[in-house]
Amino acid sequence: MGLTKRKDSYYVEFPVIDDGKTLRYARGLPGSRLKRWKVGSPNRTIAKQQEALIKTELMKGLIKSAHERVLTFKEWGESYLELEEVKRLRSYKDRVEIVRNQLIPFFGSKLLTEIKPVDVETYRGQRRKRDGSAPCLQTVNNDHIVLKHCLNVAIRRGLVVTNPASAVPLPNPHNERDRVLSDEEGARLYGAAKSHLRPVLLLAYQLGQRFGEIVNLTWDRVDLQRGFITLRGIDTKTKKPRRVPLTPDVKVVLQELAKVRRLDTNHVFLYDGKPVKGIKRVFRTALREAGISDFRFHDLRHCAATNLRRAGVDTATAMQIVGHKSDKMWKRYNAIEESDLLHAAKKLNAYLETNTLLTRTSSAKATDSITA
Image (cartoon, rainbow, N blue to C red; front, side, top):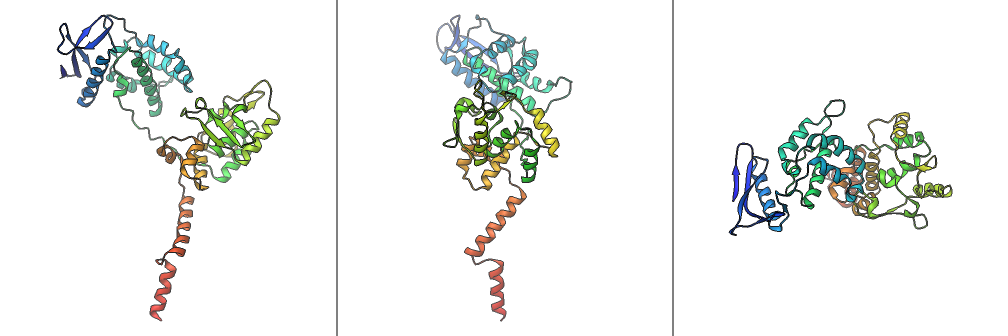
């Protein structure tokens, strides 16, 4: 019992009893036999983690017997996509694309129990776009994240014991952005936008709502009298409900839309009488006509977060409005520009002039009195 190192990997073995359905930890029990697992990594730390995990699963009786049929990744991948918990994910459409067009072609013929961390590393290295070129790091990370979730769900259903995708770290793509529109750019963009795009831009810019939260907004979520949008857990990326206060501009726009709302749909934002689903082309056109470059729709959340800070809204309240769960994410979206630093220096100088003795002006007066 314990760890054994070979050239390619560490191996873990435990005494078990196989009842034909599950394997159970059986140290010191008659009829037990040693069962060995290949960790798939030469790293001892990872091997120790896998050893502890396998032992826990054995003691819980969650490891299937070798006599039971093991699914291939292709079989499990298709079953995974049919699960209701997966279909409810906001990223389901992208998930289908990744599983069927990327993961299944590579892992499809392997049994779930055969997939090792080295296979995940190999997948990351060979991943290519349709034209054969190398994708960006975040694209590969997205595939990796889907694979991890797919195998975690398999673990919960007792199909596998460990998740090899969790043993391979995701490199940081360093793709943080701090692009914020200037007042002039914001006015130009709003002026260049088509009429059905303007309300969408306004909610994103002033309230920091995500695109999905905006286009999926229904009138039962809008309280014009009290001035709030109420989002349920199923409406948000974080799965946390939140209330978003309406600015006067947003309230006026929603009141105008309410006057012409249709009776055959409950969606707030429409185009040609149908709910808005995508804005990529019309948004790209507005950017081009406004002469704005290096800007994405999601950057409007950066604008909202930055404006909330500049307005003096406390961090907790601002995070509630835009829907950030952590201070780290709030800081990432909150851009500090040169003008903010200069404004801070002016505020600091005003405080020093009023509340302290050590300032240039007071020092000059003191010098004059000494020389007099």
